[in-house]
Image 1 (cartoon, rainbow, N blue to C red):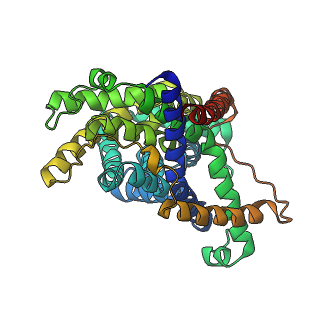
Image 2 (image 1 turned 135 degrees about the vertical axis):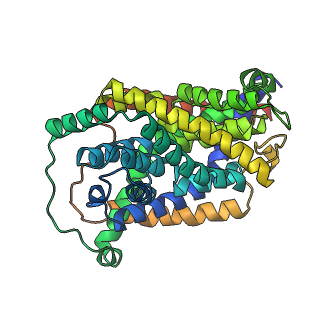
Image 3 (image 1 turned 180 degrees about the horizontal axis):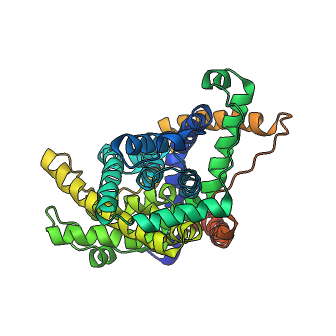
Length: 408
Protein backbone atom coordinates (compact mmCIF):
# COMPACT_ATOMS: atom_id res chain seq x y z
CA UNK A 1 0.00 0.00 0.00
CA UNK A 2 1.57 3.32 -1.09
CA UNK A 3 1.36 6.67 0.72
CA UNK A 4 -1.73 7.92 -1.13
CA UNK A 5 -3.62 4.72 -0.40
CA UNK A 6 -2.69 4.96 3.27
CA UNK A 7 -3.62 8.66 3.28
CA UNK A 8 -7.02 7.82 1.83
CA UNK A 9 -7.46 4.98 4.31
CA UNK A 10 -6.55 7.26 7.24
CA UNK A 11 -9.05 9.96 6.25
CA UNK A 12 -11.89 7.55 5.52
CA UNK A 13 -11.26 5.71 8.79
CA UNK A 14 -11.42 8.99 10.76
CA UNK A 15 -14.65 10.03 9.02
CA UNK A 16 -16.22 6.60 9.47
CA UNK A 17 -15.29 6.66 13.17
CA UNK A 18 -17.13 9.96 13.59
CA UNK A 19 -20.10 8.85 11.47
CA UNK A 20 -20.44 5.70 13.56
CA UNK A 21 -20.40 7.66 16.83
CA UNK A 22 -22.44 10.72 15.76
CA UNK A 23 -25.83 9.60 17.07
CA UNK A 24 -24.23 8.56 20.37
CA UNK A 25 -22.63 11.99 20.77
CA UNK A 26 -25.94 13.74 20.11
CA UNK A 27 -27.95 11.47 22.42
CA UNK A 28 -25.34 11.70 25.16
CA UNK A 29 -25.14 15.48 25.06
CA UNK A 30 -28.93 15.85 25.02
CA UNK A 31 -29.25 13.67 28.13
CA UNK A 32 -26.29 15.37 29.82
CA UNK A 33 -27.60 18.86 29.01
CA UNK A 34 -31.09 18.05 30.28
CA UNK A 35 -29.73 16.71 33.56
CA UNK A 36 -27.51 19.75 34.08
CA UNK A 37 -30.41 22.14 33.44
CA UNK A 38 -33.15 20.37 35.38
CA UNK A 39 -31.02 19.22 38.33
CA UNK A 40 -29.70 22.37 40.03
CA UNK A 41 -26.33 22.59 41.78
CA UNK A 42 -26.69 25.75 43.90
CA UNK A 43 -26.64 23.95 47.25
CA UNK A 44 -24.18 21.16 46.48
CA UNK A 45 -21.36 22.59 48.54
CA UNK A 46 -23.51 22.52 51.70
CA UNK A 47 -23.57 18.72 51.52
CA UNK A 48 -19.87 18.31 50.70
CA UNK A 49 -18.17 19.92 53.68
CA UNK A 50 -16.51 16.85 55.19
CA UNK A 51 -14.56 13.81 54.00
CA UNK A 52 -17.00 11.29 55.46
CA UNK A 53 -18.73 8.60 53.43
CA UNK A 54 -21.92 10.61 53.02
CA UNK A 55 -20.10 13.65 51.65
CA UNK A 56 -17.99 11.56 49.26
CA UNK A 57 -21.13 9.77 48.06
CA UNK A 58 -22.89 13.09 47.46
CA UNK A 59 -19.83 14.49 45.69
CA UNK A 60 -19.87 11.42 43.43
CA UNK A 61 -23.61 11.70 42.81
CA UNK A 62 -23.44 15.43 42.08
CA UNK A 63 -20.52 14.79 39.74
CA UNK A 64 -22.49 12.13 37.87
CA UNK A 65 -25.49 14.41 37.31
CA UNK A 66 -23.15 17.25 36.35
CA UNK A 67 -21.15 15.23 33.83
CA UNK A 68 -19.17 17.50 31.51
CA UNK A 69 -15.86 17.99 29.76
CA UNK A 70 -12.70 18.15 31.83
CA UNK A 71 -12.33 21.94 31.69
CA UNK A 72 -15.91 22.60 32.81
CA UNK A 73 -15.54 20.01 35.59
CA UNK A 74 -12.32 21.67 36.79
CA UNK A 75 -14.03 25.07 37.03
CA UNK A 76 -17.03 23.65 38.91
CA UNK A 77 -14.79 21.69 41.28
CA UNK A 78 -12.81 24.83 42.10
CA UNK A 79 -16.03 26.74 42.78
CA UNK A 80 -17.30 24.03 45.13
CA UNK A 81 -13.96 23.78 46.94
CA UNK A 82 -13.77 27.56 47.28
CA UNK A 83 -17.25 27.69 48.81
CA UNK A 84 -16.34 25.20 51.54
CA UNK A 85 -16.73 21.73 50.04
CA UNK A 86 -14.28 19.17 51.45
CA UNK A 87 -11.16 18.30 49.43
CA UNK A 88 -11.95 14.60 49.02
CA UNK A 89 -15.64 15.17 48.11
CA UNK A 90 -14.45 17.82 45.61
CA UNK A 91 -12.07 15.34 43.99
CA UNK A 92 -14.87 12.75 43.99
CA UNK A 93 -17.05 15.28 42.16
CA UNK A 94 -14.29 15.93 39.62
CA UNK A 95 -13.64 12.24 38.95
CA UNK A 96 -17.34 11.40 38.69
CA UNK A 97 -18.14 14.30 36.36
CA UNK A 98 -15.41 13.23 33.92
CA UNK A 99 -15.62 9.42 34.19
CA UNK A 100 -19.19 8.51 35.18
CA UNK A 101 -20.32 10.24 32.01
CA UNK A 102 -23.42 9.18 30.08
CA UNK A 103 -22.25 10.26 26.63
CA UNK A 104 -18.83 8.67 27.18
CA UNK A 105 -20.52 5.33 27.88
CA UNK A 106 -22.41 5.48 24.56
CA UNK A 107 -19.23 6.15 22.57
CA UNK A 108 -17.25 3.46 24.42
CA UNK A 109 -20.00 0.93 23.71
CA UNK A 110 -19.75 1.65 19.97
CA UNK A 111 -15.97 1.48 19.69
CA UNK A 112 -14.93 -0.97 22.40
CA UNK A 113 -17.87 -3.03 23.62
CA UNK A 114 -19.92 -3.54 26.75
CA UNK A 115 -17.03 -4.79 28.91
CA UNK A 116 -15.31 -1.42 28.53
CA UNK A 117 -18.54 0.39 29.41
CA UNK A 118 -18.80 -1.67 32.60
CA UNK A 119 -15.12 -0.97 33.20
CA UNK A 120 -15.67 2.76 32.71
CA UNK A 121 -18.35 2.98 35.40
CA UNK A 122 -16.92 0.48 37.88
CA UNK A 123 -13.50 2.01 37.28
CA UNK A 124 -14.86 5.49 37.91
CA UNK A 125 -16.08 4.40 41.33
CA UNK A 126 -12.79 2.61 42.08
CA UNK A 127 -10.89 5.75 41.08
CA UNK A 128 -12.81 7.71 43.68
CA UNK A 129 -12.26 5.05 46.37
CA UNK A 130 -8.52 4.80 45.69
CA UNK A 131 -8.23 8.60 45.63
CA UNK A 132 -10.03 8.77 48.97
CA UNK A 133 -7.65 6.14 50.39
CA UNK A 134 -4.48 7.83 49.10
CA UNK A 135 -5.48 11.29 50.35
CA UNK A 136 -6.51 9.85 53.73
CA UNK A 137 -3.13 8.13 54.10
CA UNK A 138 -1.04 11.11 53.01
CA UNK A 139 -3.24 13.72 54.77
CA UNK A 140 -1.83 17.06 53.50
CA UNK A 141 -4.26 18.98 55.73
CA UNK A 142 -2.19 22.16 56.04
CA UNK A 143 -1.65 22.46 52.29
CA UNK A 144 -5.35 21.91 51.58
CA UNK A 145 -6.53 24.34 54.25
CA UNK A 146 -4.12 27.09 53.12
CA UNK A 147 -5.12 26.65 49.49
CA UNK A 148 -8.83 26.84 50.30
CA UNK A 149 -8.28 29.94 52.42
CA UNK A 150 -6.29 31.62 49.65
CA UNK A 151 -9.03 30.86 47.12
CA UNK A 152 -11.63 32.44 49.37
CA UNK A 153 -9.47 35.54 49.89
CA UNK A 154 -8.70 35.94 46.20
CA UNK A 155 -12.19 35.39 44.81
CA UNK A 156 -14.58 35.90 47.68
CA UNK A 157 -17.52 33.67 48.60
CA UNK A 158 -20.52 35.77 47.63
CA UNK A 159 -23.60 33.66 46.98
CA UNK A 160 -26.42 34.40 44.61
CA UNK A 161 -29.50 34.47 46.78
CA UNK A 162 -32.05 34.17 43.99
CA UNK A 163 -34.57 31.38 44.26
CA UNK A 164 -33.94 28.54 41.83
CA UNK A 165 -36.99 27.30 39.89
CA UNK A 166 -38.13 23.76 40.66
CA UNK A 167 -37.17 21.15 38.05
CA UNK A 168 -40.85 20.41 37.37
CA UNK A 169 -41.40 24.06 36.52
CA UNK A 170 -38.35 24.07 34.23
CA UNK A 171 -39.15 20.87 32.38
CA UNK A 172 -42.65 22.06 31.52
CA UNK A 173 -41.53 25.46 30.23
CA UNK A 174 -40.18 26.58 26.87
CA UNK A 175 -37.52 28.57 28.73
CA UNK A 176 -36.25 25.38 30.36
CA UNK A 177 -35.83 23.64 27.01
CA UNK A 178 -34.12 26.71 25.57
CA UNK A 179 -31.63 26.33 28.40
CA UNK A 180 -31.15 22.68 27.42
CA UNK A 181 -30.51 23.76 23.82
CA UNK A 182 -28.04 26.40 24.99
CA UNK A 183 -26.23 23.87 27.16
CA UNK A 184 -26.21 21.32 24.30
CA UNK A 185 -24.41 23.69 21.94
CA UNK A 186 -22.07 24.77 24.73
CA UNK A 187 -21.07 21.12 25.17
CA UNK A 188 -20.29 20.83 21.46
CA UNK A 189 -18.37 24.11 21.57
CA UNK A 190 -16.19 22.72 24.34
CA UNK A 191 -15.38 19.41 22.66
CA UNK A 192 -15.42 19.91 18.88
CA UNK A 193 -11.69 20.63 18.69
CA UNK A 194 -10.74 17.61 20.80
CA UNK A 195 -13.12 15.35 18.89
CA UNK A 196 -11.90 16.56 15.49
CA UNK A 197 -8.22 16.17 16.29
CA UNK A 198 -8.71 12.95 18.27
CA UNK A 199 -10.66 11.17 15.54
CA UNK A 200 -8.17 12.36 12.91
CA UNK A 201 -5.21 11.08 14.92
CA UNK A 202 -6.98 7.74 15.43
CA UNK A 203 -7.37 7.34 11.66
CA UNK A 204 -3.74 8.28 11.02
CA UNK A 205 -2.48 5.78 13.58
CA UNK A 206 -4.76 3.04 12.29
CA UNK A 207 -3.48 3.50 8.73
CA UNK A 208 0.18 4.41 9.18
CA UNK A 209 1.48 2.96 12.48
CA UNK A 210 2.59 -0.69 12.25
CA UNK A 211 1.71 -3.25 14.90
CA UNK A 212 5.40 -3.55 15.79
CA UNK A 213 5.29 -0.03 17.26
CA UNK A 214 2.59 -1.03 19.74
CA UNK A 215 4.53 -4.17 20.62
CA UNK A 216 7.55 -2.00 21.38
CA UNK A 217 5.61 0.61 23.37
CA UNK A 218 3.33 -1.73 25.34
CA UNK A 219 4.98 -4.83 26.82
CA UNK A 220 3.11 -8.07 26.20
CA UNK A 221 1.02 -6.65 23.35
CA UNK A 222 -1.15 -9.37 21.79
CA UNK A 223 -0.41 -11.91 24.53
CA UNK A 224 -3.41 -13.87 25.82
CA UNK A 225 -1.92 -14.05 29.31
CA UNK A 226 0.51 -11.15 29.89
CA UNK A 227 2.59 -11.09 33.07
CA UNK A 228 1.85 -8.80 36.00
CA UNK A 229 4.87 -6.65 35.10
CA UNK A 230 3.53 -6.30 31.55
CA UNK A 231 0.13 -5.23 32.88
CA UNK A 232 1.79 -2.75 35.25
CA UNK A 233 3.88 -1.32 32.39
CA UNK A 234 0.76 -0.94 30.25
CA UNK A 235 -1.04 1.01 32.99
CA UNK A 236 1.94 3.39 33.22
CA UNK A 237 2.51 3.82 29.48
CA UNK A 238 -1.23 4.43 28.88
CA UNK A 239 -1.29 7.70 30.87
CA UNK A 240 2.05 8.76 29.33
CA UNK A 241 0.57 8.27 25.84
CA UNK A 242 -2.54 10.24 26.86
CA UNK A 243 -0.35 13.01 28.28
CA UNK A 244 1.29 13.57 24.88
CA UNK A 245 -1.99 13.47 22.95
CA UNK A 246 -3.56 16.05 25.35
CA UNK A 247 -6.97 15.18 23.90
CA UNK A 248 -10.08 14.97 26.08
CA UNK A 249 -11.69 11.61 26.81
CA UNK A 250 -14.34 11.95 24.09
CA UNK A 251 -11.68 12.40 21.42
CA UNK A 252 -9.53 9.63 22.87
CA UNK A 253 -12.05 6.79 22.57
CA UNK A 254 -11.41 5.95 18.87
CA UNK A 255 -7.67 6.08 19.62
CA UNK A 256 -8.27 3.71 22.55
CA UNK A 257 -10.03 1.34 20.15
CA UNK A 258 -6.99 1.46 17.86
CA UNK A 259 -4.74 0.60 20.81
CA UNK A 260 -6.95 -2.32 21.79
CA UNK A 261 -7.26 -3.64 18.24
CA UNK A 262 -3.45 -3.69 18.12
CA UNK A 263 -3.23 -5.94 21.17
CA UNK A 264 -2.80 -3.52 24.09
CA UNK A 265 -4.15 -5.05 27.31
CA UNK A 266 -7.51 -4.19 28.84
CA UNK A 267 -5.68 -2.56 31.77
CA UNK A 268 -3.56 -0.43 29.44
CA UNK A 269 -6.56 0.74 27.42
CA UNK A 270 -8.60 1.58 30.53
CA UNK A 271 -5.63 3.47 32.00
CA UNK A 272 -5.41 5.43 28.74
CA UNK A 273 -9.15 6.28 28.86
CA UNK A 274 -8.99 7.31 32.54
CA UNK A 275 -6.07 9.68 31.91
CA UNK A 276 -8.09 12.73 30.88
CA UNK A 277 -7.28 14.40 34.24
CA UNK A 278 -3.50 13.85 34.08
CA UNK A 279 -2.85 15.56 30.73
CA UNK A 280 -0.85 18.80 30.60
CA UNK A 281 -3.74 21.27 30.02
CA UNK A 282 -5.52 19.94 33.13
CA UNK A 283 -2.34 20.07 35.24
CA UNK A 284 -1.77 23.63 34.11
CA UNK A 285 -5.30 24.73 35.01
CA UNK A 286 -5.06 23.05 38.44
CA UNK A 287 -1.78 24.92 39.02
CA UNK A 288 -3.51 28.17 38.09
CA UNK A 289 -6.31 27.46 40.55
CA UNK A 290 -4.45 25.91 43.48
CA UNK A 291 -0.73 26.51 42.92
CA UNK A 292 1.83 24.04 41.59
CA UNK A 293 2.36 22.25 44.91
CA UNK A 294 -1.24 21.12 45.29
CA UNK A 295 -1.62 20.59 41.51
CA UNK A 296 1.31 18.16 41.47
CA UNK A 297 -0.04 16.45 44.58
CA UNK A 298 -3.40 15.94 42.82
CA UNK A 299 -1.54 14.62 39.77
CA UNK A 300 0.36 12.08 41.91
CA UNK A 301 -2.85 10.99 43.66
CA UNK A 302 -4.73 10.54 40.38
CA UNK A 303 -1.86 8.60 38.79
CA UNK A 304 -1.64 6.26 41.76
CA UNK A 305 -5.41 5.74 41.81
CA UNK A 306 -5.51 5.28 38.05
CA UNK A 307 -2.82 2.56 37.98
CA UNK A 308 -4.40 0.73 40.93
CA UNK A 309 -7.86 0.91 39.35
CA UNK A 310 -6.73 -0.41 35.96
CA UNK A 311 -4.87 -3.35 37.54
CA UNK A 312 -7.71 -4.30 39.89
CA UNK A 313 -10.23 -4.18 37.04
CA UNK A 314 -8.04 -6.25 34.72
CA UNK A 315 -7.64 -9.08 37.18
CA UNK A 316 -11.18 -8.70 38.50
CA UNK A 317 -12.64 -9.03 35.02
CA UNK A 318 -10.33 -11.97 34.33
CA UNK A 319 -11.50 -13.72 37.51
CA UNK A 320 -15.14 -13.08 36.58
CA UNK A 321 -14.56 -14.45 33.06
CA UNK A 322 -15.58 -11.20 31.33
CA UNK A 323 -12.18 -9.91 30.24
CA UNK A 324 -12.73 -8.90 26.58
CA UNK A 325 -10.88 -10.83 23.90
CA UNK A 326 -8.79 -9.07 21.30
CA UNK A 327 -9.94 -8.96 17.70
CA UNK A 328 -7.72 -8.54 14.71
CA UNK A 329 -8.96 -5.01 14.00
CA UNK A 330 -11.71 -2.64 15.09
CA UNK A 331 -11.39 -0.32 12.13
CA UNK A 332 -14.26 -0.19 9.71
CA UNK A 333 -13.87 -2.01 6.40
CA UNK A 334 -14.20 0.25 3.36
CA UNK A 335 -17.15 -1.75 2.02
CA UNK A 336 -19.07 -1.18 5.25
CA UNK A 337 -18.41 2.54 5.60
CA UNK A 338 -21.39 4.88 5.46
CA UNK A 339 -23.80 2.04 4.62
CA UNK A 340 -27.58 2.51 4.74
CA UNK A 341 -27.99 0.72 8.06
CA UNK A 342 -29.23 1.46 11.58
CA UNK A 343 -26.40 3.96 12.09
CA UNK A 344 -27.54 5.93 9.04
CA UNK A 345 -31.14 6.18 10.28
CA UNK A 346 -30.12 6.95 13.87
CA UNK A 347 -27.84 9.73 12.64
CA UNK A 348 -30.64 11.23 10.54
CA UNK A 349 -33.03 11.12 13.50
CA UNK A 350 -30.62 12.75 15.93
CA UNK A 351 -29.51 15.34 13.39
CA UNK A 352 -33.20 16.27 13.07
CA UNK A 353 -33.39 16.62 16.87
CA UNK A 354 -30.27 18.79 16.72
CA UNK A 355 -32.12 20.95 14.19
CA UNK A 356 -34.97 21.44 16.69
CA UNK A 357 -32.47 22.35 19.41
CA UNK A 358 -30.79 24.77 17.01
CA UNK A 359 -34.16 26.47 16.44
CA UNK A 360 -34.68 26.74 20.21
CA UNK A 361 -31.18 28.09 20.71
CA UNK A 362 -30.81 30.47 17.75
CA UNK A 363 -34.29 30.96 16.29
CA UNK A 364 -36.06 32.57 19.21
CA UNK A 365 -35.95 36.05 20.69
CA UNK A 366 -34.20 35.03 23.91
CA UNK A 367 -31.80 37.84 24.69
CA UNK A 368 -30.49 36.53 28.00
CA UNK A 369 -26.77 36.68 28.39
CA UNK A 370 -24.97 33.77 29.97
CA UNK A 371 -21.36 33.77 30.95
CA UNK A 372 -19.52 30.50 31.43
CA UNK A 373 -15.94 30.02 32.38
CA UNK A 374 -14.38 26.68 31.64
CA UNK A 375 -10.83 26.69 32.85
CA UNK A 376 -10.09 30.41 32.87
CA UNK A 377 -8.86 32.83 30.29
CA UNK A 378 -5.21 31.77 30.47
CA UNK A 379 -6.00 28.43 28.89
CA UNK A 380 -6.62 30.29 25.63
CA UNK A 381 -3.14 29.36 24.38
CA UNK A 382 -3.99 25.67 24.58
CA UNK A 383 -7.40 26.33 23.06
CA UNK A 384 -5.76 28.18 20.18
CA UNK A 385 -3.35 25.32 19.60
CA UNK A 386 -6.28 22.87 19.53
CA UNK A 387 -8.20 25.19 17.22
CA UNK A 388 -5.39 25.26 14.65
CA UNK A 389 -4.87 21.50 15.00
CA UNK A 390 -8.59 21.02 14.33
CA UNK A 391 -8.40 23.25 11.22
CA UNK A 392 -5.37 21.30 9.99
CA UNK A 393 -7.34 18.11 10.65
CA UNK A 394 -10.17 19.32 8.38
CA UNK A 395 -7.64 20.13 5.65
CA UNK A 396 -6.06 16.68 6.08
CA UNK A 397 -9.45 14.95 5.92
CA UNK A 398 -10.51 16.89 2.84
CA UNK A 399 -7.27 15.95 1.10
CA UNK A 400 -7.77 12.33 2.06
CA UNK A 401 -11.25 12.30 0.55
CA UNK A 402 -9.86 13.71 -2.69
CA UNK A 403 -7.09 11.09 -2.61
CA UNK A 404 -9.67 8.33 -2.20
CA UNK A 405 -11.18 9.24 -5.59
CA UNK A 406 -7.77 9.30 -7.23
CA UNK A 407 -6.53 5.94 -5.94
CA UNK A 408 -9.76 4.02 -6.56
